[in-house]
Length: 594
Image 1 (cartoon, rainbow, N blue to C red):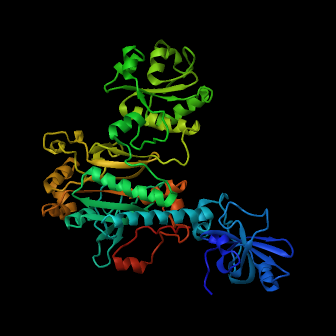
Image 2: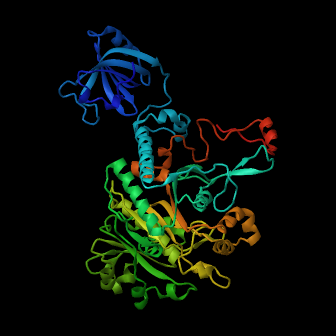
């Protein structure tokens, strides 16, 4: 007899019916002549009742089973005894009086309990990931991810988009993160690359005339890991022809609206706010602004300089210095001088020379830089909207330092003061990005998004010889959710002439550009349409909607911080015969992952 329903879905609708259920023994309580077992499956838990006087055979089996045994049960659904209901679960008003139980598989003692909120080493959890995935929170996370994917496909399928797969074995085009390389057995000494994204393929699909494409795409990047980064990840990939950036943003909002409704039952209001990159940096100190709370950055440069406050800081420099501030409401009693000094040490990483701060009193400042700022007490508090009991934090420095410091401090202080509301989802767009950004590590200019992004209409001339390309802005747009980049996209370059100029501005010689991207540049010469698209990080989207701490909690089989999967011990050593077949020789015997 097949399963009647999932254990976690048994409720009053099944009263007095005989049901067949399958699942795992989650907990067992032996009360003498009565035994209660919580039966768990992917939908939740139902209570099983065994009575020695009513069914001795089933009771005898219940006596022997232990946690995580896999069982089949048959029984009748009845109401729980009055006062014994559990209102926290769907099946909490009923239980199953079991007439037969069959053990399908026993379980040895587990390396850890299948429970939420138990302290277990992460590598041990990943080694037995299939056990961790039995935890209720993990079951919820993976199910919600599936719902996000289903709602995404539903929206795009209903709006004329075609789901098209692109290759996982591609050409290596080193730009950005490192590629994962796959050796070719047929063409020895040659390598495929796993795609960092389907970027060029989806653009080529527009050249092929498919007009509207989407894909739930697997992507691969060989880079150092952190909580929101994995070597393999998934993105919702979209590309369109004959649309401008606002059309694409509208479609993306529609998809997100459908996902939020289907996963959380939340009706989000459209359109989402749209702010420029410059406004985002000025107000929030970051291009990933968290708009769930206020405490925005305010510029007081003119007030500070007109009143000769800290004049040497502004005059003895070869670059523009700004004075900007945030106001921490009611924080005067929260922060001692020692606590603020600790913040200043933490902020050293951003290159700040000094964190200027003062507590707001009734008619003067105290602490920190209070004495220096007291001559402009009335003007400064009025300008910032600061009240008695608040703390003002200020930075006098160049734009990047001011933005980095106050952007980080804003989030830190808001968390400490409990200013960030829970279960609130604030979406917004950041648009009008610089086309290029300076990579401090490599000390060179790179594409702010990627080298196929089109400049704003009217900015194309900045890519001509003799012009400064770094003045150009891009037709690009990032979607932000609660202070994290959910995804980004752009209108693409669709002519070979402009694409060649873009590569030149990035330092590619023409020969080098054609050696790496010749197939793409040649395609642009053969009737390529105007096009653009966007990619949404599915892992991050799922993390934010589930409230998970990092994306490993919404990926079925993730890697650890060393890019190792402890369960299968991948990556692994391969045999000399395999290497010989590929024409590869390993100079140093590798260590085995444990």
